[in-house]
Amino acid sequence: MIPEIQRFGRDFATRSIAPRKKAYDERVLRKGRDEWRVWDPKKSKLGAAMQKGLTDVPLRRGMKILYLGISTGTTASHLSDIVGFEGMIYGIEFSARMVRDLMQVSSQRKNIVPILADARMPENWAQRVEKVDLVYCDVAQRDQSEILMRNAKVFLKKGGHMMIAIKARSIDVAAKPRDIFVQEKQKLSKMFNITSDVNLNPFEKDHAFFVGRMI
Ligand SMILES: C[S@@+](CC[C@H](N)C(=O)[O-])C[C@H]1O[C@@H](n2cnc3c(N)ncnc32)[C@H](O)[C@@H]1O
Image (cartoon, rainbow, N blue to C red; front, side):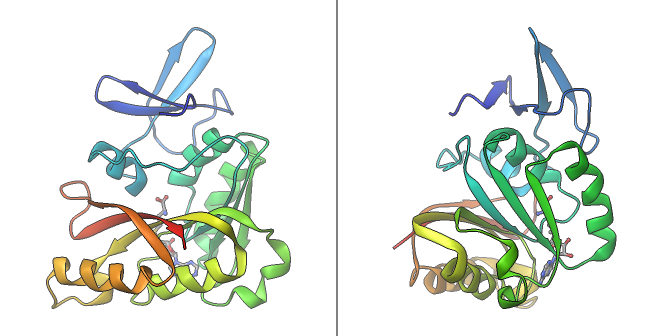
């Protein structure tokens, strides 16, 4: 585990780069001079994936991340602690209401850049984003894998990584989630070597979380 993430009993936490400022209603622990923000697995799919045993976490200080579906910045706030001020998170979100709340978080965390835009159309905002080390995708859309791949093609550095939360019910409400996970994995395998695949039950019903590296 990288030094910016620590375990406190069963909980994971990130060392805050914005002490005394909360990003959501997370619990805060103090250890020496550091403040550690507990990563709530019920509110963050990456937090849930780690609770479910994900150890393949290709995150490090200074990295650049493109985050598709950043919402109000719950998960992004922990990524922000990890990448630190040397890193950057470009957050794409098409709901103006979510971006308004995200701006509260980004005003305390200068390494989050909120971008009000549709993740399906990177050509409209490509000039605002640089090449990144990781694309994180949590858009809960029928074409979520295609959205990730379209963006990875434009922004992901050679050999870069991806993380995606697959919401089976957004793709097909009638199909068995297990079949959807297999289908999406096959699609993504054309572009990525999928290195981890975690089912997020019971934290998130009918969700899987994949980690991969660009082939
Ligand atoms: C499940 S929420 C993301 C939660 C967030 N990833 C977190 O863990 O803190 C999905 C978000 O994706 C956004 N979204 C869905 N489709 C999108 C699109 N095409 N472009 C940009 N944002 C999108 C939604 O508005 C919503 O805020």
